[in-house]
Image 1 (tube, rainbow, N blue to C red):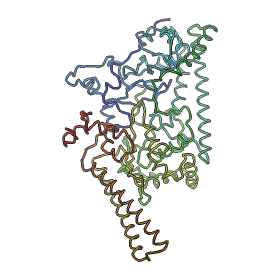
Image 2: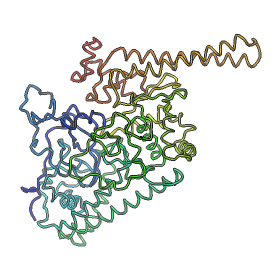
Image 3: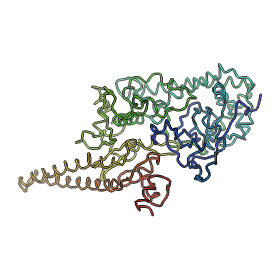
Image 4: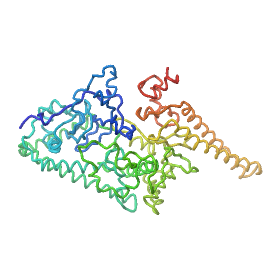
Length: 576
């Protein structure tokens, strides 16, 4: 056997951490439809969750193709010649893995990616990568790696040690390589229900057909179990093949197995360097989460994010694109125009209304009420069964009505579910923003990807002001009834209560209006390249999210001076 690092098989690490590349973003929070031709933002492999064979890359960084380095690399813009180590190896297909994990099991890294100091990479000719993936993801290779490291707790799988490990001279690629590819396809399909994953097709409960949600949940969980069992069986074949390649005896195999158990016990007490927020599709998810995923899909559909015509056509997800090709800028489930970019107008004969202004309201009296729009999607999917499905969904979500679910800002509500869903690799980037009144009787939902300098004024003019007018008219009706009614009796007391409640509601709405207008009148020009947390910060008085307040305080203290919003706040005298 030869050492792992050869001319055709090398392991490398980049030269910057995720924090050094100060413009790290989640792939769904930048203007991807504008960047594909220019390739300004590129996928960024930065350690994170241990997910063998298939692991989506949720982060992107801005890349200066002319200088051949990260934009603003370490802030040294006056040194244009500065290049990260191993930059010549960026954008090549390979394998990647997290620094710390229970087992060494790498995943496919598509071409077109850069990698960080904690996002290691194995680079080799593409024809050899499947075989290398199978061998290095085996139980035997993990055992050898840990022996070389001096196993204890969560080991750190560093490149320097990997380069010293032996690799078999001849590997039957038709067996190990093909088996590794099959495992990759299975695991990618298991992630096809995660809407933040590039492989997303449809929520789990829309990938099969059954009468009730409960039946769909059971069917999906059965599908996940079948895929897990198939993946485990294939991994067992790879382990057996690797044992033979490395000449492992029965005693050796027993030592590996016992070592795995001992290591697992040590690892349970260690700190895992994985993503604490991201829920994986592998576990199948609990019933509540699966139903919440459907609600999220409904919201995205009427905002023009998802193409509802894909419902009922979820087959063939494994053929989504070649594993080592550059990542698509967005998943195939998104609504696209004829130019292949994200749609900006309703396609012909499209079966659903779309709110292109990116604003919907928590307001039963408005045609763009979020509950009304969600129901339109449910009716499109379930037709005559939509009402029954809604009732079942509420029961599983633990709420009395859908409005309760969307109105609740804390745990168990749509907003909290959404923030968790769109938090990956320690970056929080929700794209549906909840702007809520003080007593939660009114709200606007804003779609981040429609954000522009006029959006808040549209919200005021088309939603908030008409709402106030309607409620003031209603107050006038109550007062008119009061003036014509007798001053005693139950009817008069009820009118008094109605008038008081209506006055409180109008006061609440005017407070909401005042806070929203205060931000709108700042006339800030949003730039999605600044990211979610900076763009949402000025709305901190209306958004029930402590992150918004935190980043607003940071901006007021002069931090993030490089951002467009930071520059505008200085120009307007908000920041000295």
